[in-house]
Length: 231
View 1 (cartoon, rainbow, N blue to C red):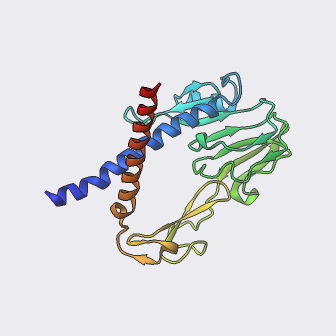
View 2 (cartoon, rainbow, N blue to C red):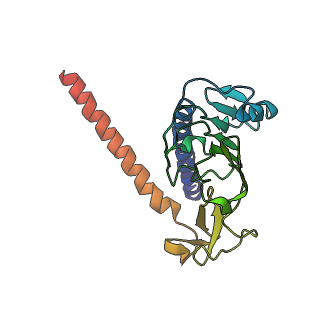
View 3 (cartoon, one colour):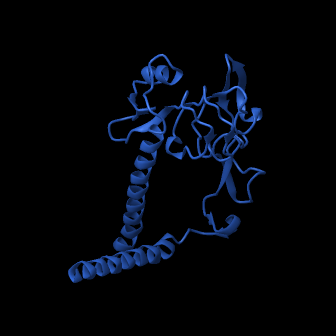
């Protein structure tokens, strides 16, 4: 019985973390779709992508789910002609296949604006803005009708997906957006620079953290209840 409980605890913890992540993703995604007034038009690049993908338009986003059991995700973001001068956090649309930022007086794009956009293959910018990660991060870069088209995001890792010179020993390289990569420990390794061998002690690490969070939440709830009764 004890063995069964010890196996169940990490699963429950993972489910709780996933639920929190999904809720925060939904909120951030909604905010991205409402960064500009109006809606995606059928004749635009994002509109055509949405139509051909059988997606659903919501504000400035095109949403789609791969099957009925999966939540909707953003596959297209159209912020063209929105009078934007700075591009900062777009993480709510990190699942996008296409992003259109053309027809904006953009003077600055954050270095991390497209970090995590591993599926982004079509990016449309004003012609004076350089493709994120530079031209070497894209298969094709061209300027047409006042727009810069960045197409075919390239991986910063080697093509085999094996150990990379960019990452420490015992770790694997994975794409993490145009010009970015991330390193994750190979199987049976964890810790600083993946130097520790063996299974990661998830229960010992996250168990006390979860317990302390519950205790603090209960204390705050009790405190608020006392204040309410005092009033």
